[in-house]
Structure formats: structure tokens, C-alpha cells
Image 1 (cartoon, helix red, strand yellow):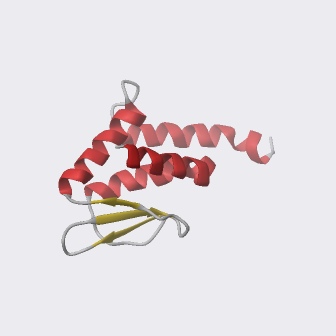
Image 2 (cartoon, rainbow, N blue to C red):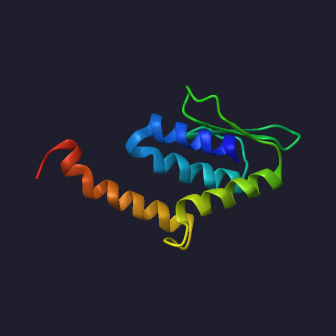
Length: 110
């Protein structure tokens, strides 16, 4: 999981206040590995390997198979939810609420 943690740290550094979105979308993508474009680009090859990329400058994180995708998702749940959130969805919602609360401070206003 060291490679996963390095990738997650990269996402935090490069996507700053929107990092939580990339992480949550990567979590969802690992559970339903279909090739797609968006904030998280997913490339799935015929052998079942799944490459997650968080933006165009990301070299990506390669998950070799379904077992590795499950380990990735469990690692995210442990790292981000711990005992505080019941699910990654709850974690993402809390992060989004924090972001909305900080908008006036970050961008001025009110």
C-alpha cells in the first residue's frame, strides 16, 4: 500500500481543495472499473488491470486486478473514514461541507 499512499499524497498536493473529490471518485471507480474520462480517468485493459489517473499530469495508479481494487477501496476506508465516518460517501459529504464552509474565507465575500 506504499504506492497507494504515495499516489494519495500526490493527489492531496496537486489538487489542493478539491482533493477529496478525486479521492472519492477514485474509490467509486475502483468498485466499478469501466473506462471513462473525467476528474478521474480510468483505463481498463482486457486483462482486468485498471489505471486510475487524477488529471492529465498524473502518471496514475495501476491496480492489477479485482483483488487489488478491493484492497485499494478498503485502504481508503481505513485511511479516510477510520472510526469517524461510516462510509466513504459520508466522508466525502463531510469534506464537501467543510469546503462550502470555507468558501467565504478562501475566496472572499460575506
